Length: 67
Image (cartoon, rainbow, N blue to C red; front, top):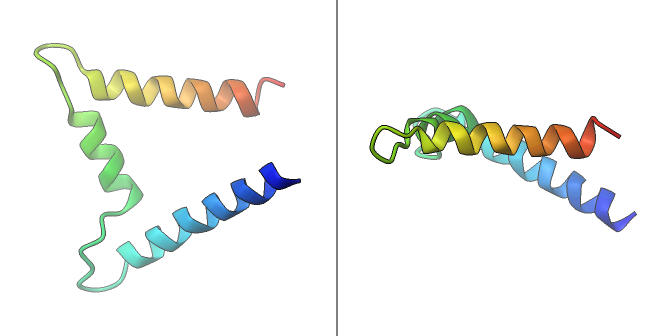
């Protein structure tokens, strides 16, 4: 029960940040902007950001969709 409540709070915070980012003149980056910045991160020729994003989505899918 507590874990479900914490996930609901986290989802609400993500939604609040996204709404705040869409206001006119807002300096808060949206979720898409944050993901784009992470995806551009490279260490030499290795796309570390893309690997991290793939790993995150793999982990999320494994824990919530594979059971």
